[in-house]
Amino acid sequence: MIRFESVTKRYPDGTTAVDDLSFEVAEGELVTLVGPSGCGKTTTMKMVNRLIDPTSGRIFVEGRDIATTDPVRLRRRIGYVIQQTGLFPHRTVLDNTATVPHLLGRPRKQSRDRAAELLERVGLDPAVHGPRYPEQLSGGERQRVGVARALAADPPVLLMDEPFGAVDPVVRDRLQKEFLRLQATLHKTVLLVTHDIEEAIRLGDRIAVYGQGRIEQYDTPASVLGAPASPYVAEFVGSDRALKQLVVTGIDPGDLEHPPFARLGEPADQAADRLRAEGARWAVVLDEEGGLHGWVGTEEMTGARGNVAAHARRMEAWVPVSGSLKDAFSEMLKYDAGWIAVVDGTRFLGVLTPAKLHEALRRTIGADEQGVPREETRVDSVPTD
Ligand SMILES: Nc1ncnc2c1ncn2[C@@H]1O[C@H](COP(=O)(O)OP(=O)(O)OP(=O)(O)O)[C@@H](O)[C@H]1O
Image 1: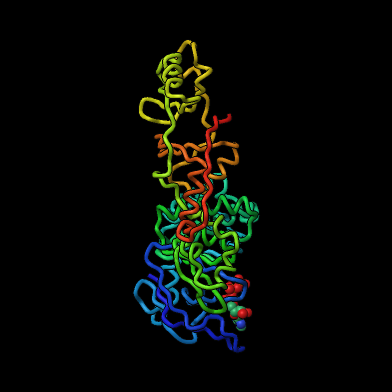
Image 2 (image 1 turned 120 degrees about the vertical axis):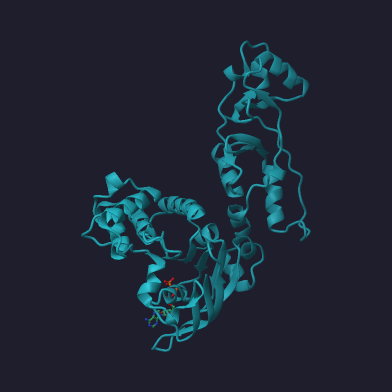
């Protein structure tokens, strides 16, 4: 979808910003360009929409050499999001978002409808935020409008230069999550520049780690973290790369344990007898469809009346199976839980214990192959509420 072939950019003062760069971004792929300040990331990006022309080499977008494509036509196929969102200060948010479709010749009403739809998709209320001017928005809301406007013409390619850079870490975290959700439905081909390795890892299907004007490694986040191509990359991704692996490693259902369970409609004393016979001090409570309802202690149901439902407590610590090990770990810490329930939708799949989490993490960093000794850990705790 985007292909660089031996591209070099030398500025008139002799600075080589990009040096013989070749790489390819597949259709629907989100690639993050990450590296220290001044390493050529922005120059790379601006060559894609011809804000900067290369000194030598060729760049292809959608199979066409962009040197032979009219820049205006090219930019219609490429959305551009920048840190200072570049919104028109004297136009409302709705008009800002509708600008591009309108310029492309869509009728005004249609452009505005489309703009309202996009504002909603990025988490803004068109009725509330649409009539406001950019200065009447928070930083995070302005960034969202920037994304909505870039998407307005439904371009297949998005260029994003530090799109979440101007907001505090909490808002950035939310914007990143929202953007990932959006991208999961839109499948745009995205080139995203960041100097933040955590952001690159979190967002990228692949990461290009830049040295001076060159890509030092181009691979998936897991590979960059697991097998840095050079001491430079290892240093750039940081000595805590094992921890960063938590972010990019999914929960493996094979790691889940299956504690005893009781059904919502089961008589409590009967459930208590059964659980005691199994030696269980507590059980997960499931509904008839296998959905997670909560948990219950064996002791408190002994001799009690009513159904299990009357004694069940809320399960606070849970994560979706689509979550990362980091999500699981942070929920465990948040609730000070000895384990965490894993669900698929509402369906209960099992629980992840710290021991299994530890095992999964060791696998991702190849600790076993490297012969790092392993200590046995055992956990047998009752959940807290
Ligand atoms: N117009 C220009 N004339 C001369 N040198 C330039 C020009 N624009 C950028 N450079 C230089 O080219 C190099 C790469 O700049 P670029 O903006 O691509 O880096 P970057 O990786 O995006 O940096 P940052 O993260 O700080 O934005 C830098 O050394 C910069 O000083």
